Amino acid sequence: MGKKVHLGLIYGGKSGEHDVSLQTAFAVMGELDYAKYEITPFYITRLGEWRVGPMLAGKPLAIDELRLDPADPAAAQPVPAFPLAPLLDRLAGGSAIAGGGQPIDVVFPLLHGPFGEDGTIQGLLEIADIPYVGAGVLASAAGMDKITMKKIFAYEGLPQCVFRYFNRAQWEKDASFFIMECEVALGYPCFVKPSNLGSSVGISKAKNREELIAAVDFAFRYDRRVIVEEFVDAREIEVSVLGNDDPKTSVPGEIAPSNEFYDYKAKYVDGKSTIHIPANIPNKTADAVRDMALRAFLAIDGSGLSRVDFFLRKTDGQLFINEVNTMPGFTPISMYPLMWKESGLPYRDLLDKLIELALKRYADKQTIDYGGSGGN
Ligand SMILES: Nc1ncnc2c1ncn2[C@@H]1O[C@H](COP(=O)(O)OP(=O)(O)O)[C@@H](O)[C@H]1O
Ligand SMILES: [Mg+2]
Image (cartoon, rainbow, N blue to C red; front, side, top):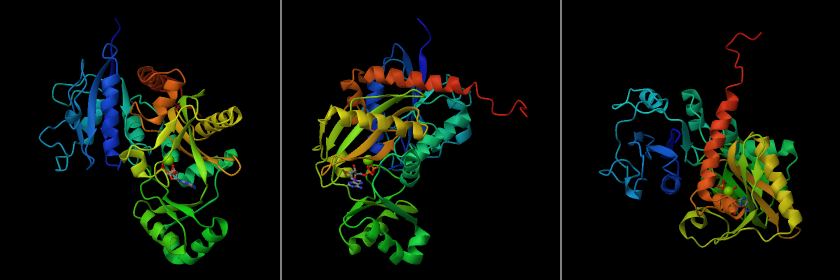
């Protein structure tokens, strides 16, 4: 039998999606085939400190072991920060850590939101020269920042809702100008969001001027830039994309939020949102969303995986792209894996495929001349 692939799983993290990440890590660890993989867990606390666990060669960690420190289950206490140099050394297979780590072949960053899905961890892994699952630096950052993402979609001619945006200084200087702009271009209700976040954190629906101002102030708690969008009364359709330069799409799914909109509670807490896979939509519409999902994935230079989300307007069936999520929810009951399951690719095979794509992307990049050899 060939050598096992040594997989580094990074999970937890400083973002609001810390707990979701733990659930994902638990599911992935439980599902991986230990005949093929050995796994080293890397846990990032809520404070951003790193803990490295022992290599798992046969069985996953229990859910309460994931924090790699049973004495500190909530990880609320500051622990000495893990210095970055030995950590990178460990990732890259050096021996600075007691016991000397086996080199990691590929990393699976199971992190959502800021510092995980936004290109920062991807940059770290690029510098450490380690293959990793999923989107690279550019696609991660572009997919995380709603303003940037929408500008890229606009260039591709992808239909999307009307929006306006501003930064804090602009708003403080001339709020009345932006209020007027939003009222004229978008009307009420409108959606107010921090540009760079996920999981519906900081998002509100504003029904009048007073609510708009409160919503903007609220969104500024989470980012320096805010985007305001017209309200689209729509069904929410999603598609999974998998691949690198020649990606494939799954059957589309539909999610019917339990709340007025698909907010954090509807996503993660109450479990009452209903999903339909495949989505009950005409074939023509399914084809259109799959085609648009591919275009969006390629537009941000995606790799590995992405879930692309759409609004299907109720009044006239018009499609709008909402966003690309480069690290979508990834537990076995999340939309991304479920849409693949329905398309004939079960969770375990999906994990294999993602790891294979990461190694492939890394190998492809080795052929690039970065100019170090002199060029011209
Ligand atoms: N312009 C909009 N019109 C109608 N509903 C919206 C609009 N924007 C967001 N929503 C609702 O809010 C949810 C979260 O918004 P989204 O932009 O997807 O943020 P996140 O990146 O946090 O998932 C959507 O799934 C949808 O239910
Ligand atoms: Mg969303």
